[in-house]
Image 1 (cartoon, one colour):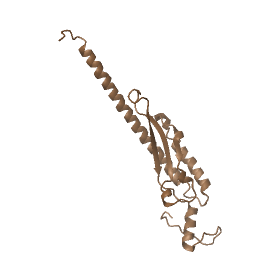
Image 2 (cartoon, rainbow, N blue to C red):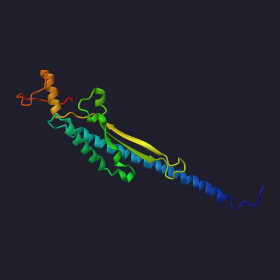
Image 3 (cartoon, rainbow, N blue to C red):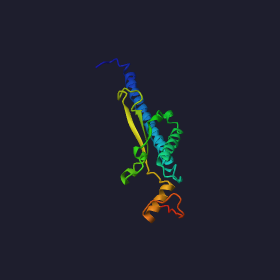
Image 4 (cartoon, rainbow, N blue to C red):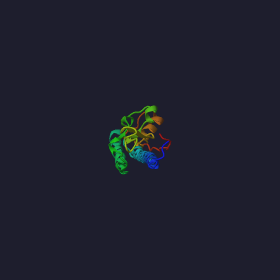
Length: 179
């Protein structure tokens, strides 16, 4: 047994200090990742709401123009949240492919909305996981609101069995039941 142990406490302190600082940095990074994810989810949700309700008051039937305009408005809303401050690249934002189709089945209708993909580092230092990144996806599929023109056409088809003529003298009352 050695009688000279004058540096023992310094070595123990260094080992404990490195472990404690690493643990604190890991908790800090996990909390930053959680905050980034929550903010990305909120921005995606708000962009989805803008996309889904943008053209619900239009009387036109053409989905191409209204979907393009709604997509532009949704992207603008998403970009208003300055996610690049949290390390999220706004280029991962996209409108789901089901939203761009003119006629949707019941299953596809539920997948209408927006999503964003982004990557976050697992640890700050990169020594534990070797600079690996998590690929995260935030989705918001709420189902697109039909336009007033679509509701009128569906009401005409339900009442008369055919599409309404463009200059129809019949007044339509649209009941808000989702058409």
